[in-house]
Image: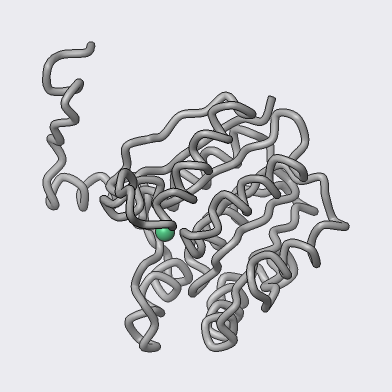
Length: 218
Ligand code: MG
């Protein structure tokens, strides 16, 4: 029901309720916990998705029956583990990471999760990495969680390399609160990502804390 509060975006989930929901629905085993804590333990930015967003990626991929998936922006492999666990036997995830140290930490976390044969960490800058994984397409899902100034480029690539009915998912779709900043070129890139997605996909921006854009390719 759309009451005044849902129209204005009032949030009822405080930190404790969010933690409760994550504990109940998005429980960490040792492998997920290791990947989740890895940024803090390895002097990396702790900017990965939260447990509920990770589980949402898992559920979306399972719903879509995704088998071939690309992620742009690996960090420590936390979201990659959630997604890889949604794939059927024989499924593959290619995840692109430009920072060699992050890629090494991610490989450790992914191997510890028993997913070394399922997930390939492609060490490359985003566009170069996408060119490298391209021959494995068309893909069932693409998850973008990388440099915000090139979201439009990544979205265009996804549009060209997803099968019809494939999923495009973009994290940080509210760009840390700066989505509507007219002065920031990265905000403009993020808005182009949204607008192209709305045109070429059946799409929605799920109001997670920083927005998760989700679209089904037409
Ligand atoms: Mg993110």
